Image (tube, rainbow over all chains, first blue to last red; front, side, top):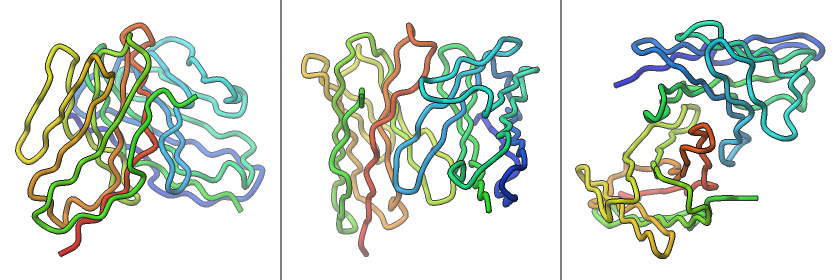
Length: 114
Length: 113
C-alpha cells in the first residue's frame, strides 16, 4: 500500500526555536498533502491543505505565519513551527493523496517544547 | 462545528464479540466515508471505506453499513480480537471541499481476552 514517511518522529526543543517536520510520500506522487494536529485522546484537527507548487490553504484559527508549510515537490511537504512555545506541543500528523484517492497518513511527530 | 458525530466514545467488547461504532453526518455533499484505525503513537491507518451508492461493504472481519436516507454509517468488527484494541475514527469528505477529511471524535475500543 501507499507509504507516507514522517520525520522526525519525536523532537524536543527549547521555547523560541523553530522546528521543521518533513512528510514524504515514498511510493506515489502526492498532489495534495494535509497537516493535522492531534491532542491526547482527541480527534485529528486539520491545520492546512497544501497542493504541490501552490500556497497552502489554512483552516480558520491556524496562524499561517507560525505554521509555515512548503510543498515544493510531489513527494515532499514540510511544516515549520516557528518560534515554538509550550502550547505548540502536540502530535503533528501529515497525510498525502492524489486527487480523489484515499489519504494515507504518516506516523506523526511528537513535538515537545520546553 | 463537528460535521461528523461518532459514538460511543469508548467501547469494551469481549474477545469473539461484535464491536459496533456509529457515525452520523449532516452534509449531503459528502461522498466518501472512510474508517481509520489508530494505535497509540502512530498515525491513522485506512481500514475500510464506502461510497453512498453502496449500502454495505465487507472486508474480512470489518463491515461498513451505510444508510443514506438517515445519513448514518457504522463499522462492525466481527469476532473482535485483543489486537483490534485501538482508537477508531470515522470520517467523511466531499469533492467540493478539496478532499479534506472531516473526522469524528473517535472511539476507544478495548477487546478483553
